[in-house]
Length: 422
Ligand SMILES: Cc1cc2nc3c(=O)[nH]c(=O)nc-3n(C[C@H](O)[C@H](O)[C@H](O)COP(=O)(O)OP(=O)(O)OC[C@H]3O[C@@H](n4cnc5c(N)ncnc54)[C@H](O)[C@@H]3O)c2cc1C
Image: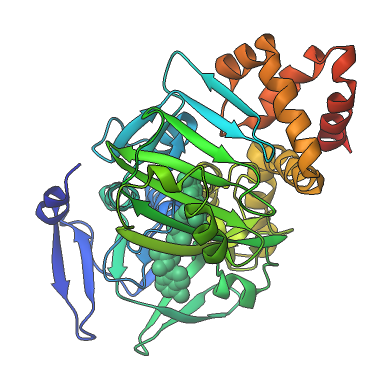
């Protein structure tokens, strides 16, 4: 999908407010100030929710505060195969590089390397990815309003009213908050915040990667999470980290470290910072509103990937919102089926991921060294990672690895068991 296609297939409708509304050229679809479903935010979760809502027959509008979909980018752009599958976009130009493996470095210098026989993840162009997602929502019949910030939402028993920054009002039976990590409207409506929000930062920089088809992870560079090197082209990489706080300071130190500095081939071309929510909100539905994606803390706590869980949950949110709106019943009782369904689909994965995250955070550097060294010496475990490793579903790999820990691995098995079953 190229950007020109975006411009060719959709035309701009000038509006009194000066904002631009993009509409599908299909003559049946007309602009309405009253919608069944209004989705706030045109990130991947918002576009997927809108696509599914429109496909379920609901009049659907996406409202995005920026003047273009996909900017600014706040992401390392690493997508596993399941995330790409969930996006349903096919082989598209946003895929940059395939990754077959990874090298994980422990604080004391031990490392684990593995390489699968087929690609397990891709570096993507997030801007193009988000635009392709939005385009598919429009193709399904949703409308998109750009440059429109939703200031607040007022709820009546059967209709919500969204107030835009310019004073304009839009009504919808159900609102989907896909606002990203801030989730301001979701919080105001009564959706609780995620368990924690990490601080993230990344540079795109000329760099000599060890291996173009492998990512590098560093467990000691970022307290509470990790640092990464993701090749994004020849002599070019995304280097970043997430940690408890002050990510920019830790990133500066990481760029000066012996592992990174000698391989830098120029100054950063771009820097970005953003929050990463971990631990989903305890409830994600209230009367008249659902929260999805980062707004609901639906992020994998092991890798920080938010696109896969966001898409899984957005499909459910779009369908439930559309059905409830068409039935004319946006009550909490009706909408809470979303909360139950997404937890059934992916709740356990996020729950186990959160336990693992807490466990790794509690380990001292020596324990991390022990863990990495132990796995690096076990050929059978490395083969298992290569065969069934999946960044989107890490608990499956863990469950396969547990029985393989022998007598000498009892210490580690104990740690993992605690993570899985408490
Ligand atoms: C440093 C870093 C690296 C990451 N790397 C990866 C990675 O490699 N792989 C991965 O899967 N995930 C990654 N993530 C997480 C991923 O970026 C997010 O999980 C994902 O973008 C969430 O999608 P979303 O649709 O929920 O929200 P977003 O993509 O944040 O979209 C929300 C949209 O809502 C709009 N909006 C907000 N409020 C309003 C309002 N009031 N009115 C109108 N519009 C509004 C915003 O402008 C924005 O466009 C990373 C995150 C960070 C911080």
